[in-house]
Image 1 (cartoon, rainbow, N blue to C red):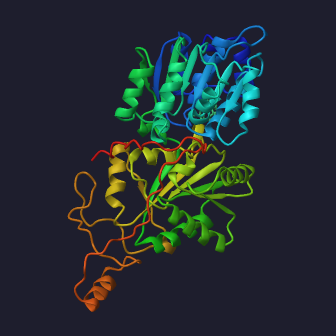
Image 2 (image 1 turned 90 degrees about the vertical axis):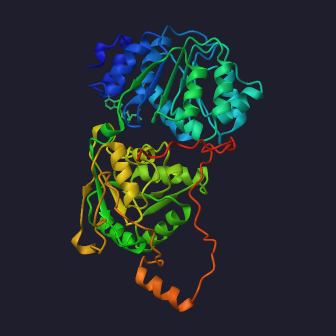
Image 3 (image 1 turned 45 degrees about the horizontal axis):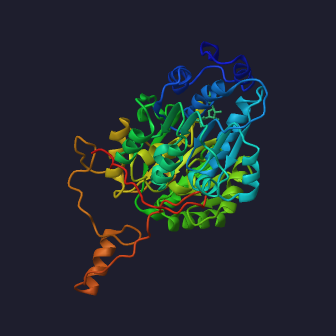
Length: 450
Ligand code: AMP
């Protein structure tokens, strides 16, 4: 029950209005400590209810009678424009019975309109680091009276090259009394550095371990012989599974476009999102998906970041993600706040070891599924090690369809070969989603544990 927390009655009224009955684990753990004014470092995934875990204590601090606003009192930094918009909505929903006002500053919006909004001084400012810094540099932003600083999805901000911008903005909030940092992963050295710089003796709450993440989501693998076979399985799934909305993940833009093309040819209402798509495409795709006009989205990891669409109940990993954390993020798109979801990964022999590393990382075993109508010949390695990895799998030369014999024949016919540089499609790189700050560096994630 939310009444267990020492929250102002106007906030409890909003919570009841929103039909939030039971707090989620992250809310139970974080709200009391946040209300005490502690610095917190919280590891919690999107979908865990983390937003309310910081928004409610923040509003509780700011709540009071109506008066002329003179200072920005709370600042929320987050990596993407969409996440900023979602967070603003959440703040507005919880503050509906108060006089608290929030403002949004993200890239892609009119600079002058934002400056005018800043002149009215919101109590809470929510924004992405790039544009906030621009407003700061233009002299439109005063953060000296910020009491509370929140860094949401801090690991993603680091990935996107925002480390310096975040630090600079945190330093501007020199008089703050409390800082809370949320990240989906425990992060690497970059995150540790940031924590050391911005938090004071923080309490670390590691609320939902990755293995708890997908409780509401069934996780399956289907083995496939090659990419063309994966496409056949994909078509079968889209035609036969029961789902409201589906998202198909690929590792490259090229593959996302290819699958999109195939689905359009089959007359599916589909959108594709990857780093080459601009904000307009992105907004259109997400609006259509939310309204239900489009049921299927093909996306790369970067493009799907911060996506929060109700009714996304099927995730298909056409390509296996390269790390356990990315897997968790993808699957986090479905089965949100206790809803049921289905996550299916398509696995060729080349994907097997990565898949088994991810199983070990999650301490979960995915359900093996076969579909009679599209069954191939590959069903997994003949022998597996204790780790779940294939025994003695050597890299085989395959042609485009994965047919080794055909590839060998071609090779024999050609005679001795020279070493060739293979032009593989590049993995989707991380770009700023608010289209403002250029990417400075990519922080490498630790590899999936072996
Ligand atoms: P978040 O992890 O903050 O993005 O939250 C995921 C979704 O769960 C959002 O749509 C929230 O509105 C919803 N949510 C958060 N906490 C609760 C709760 N205690 N009860 C019901 N829904 C919740």
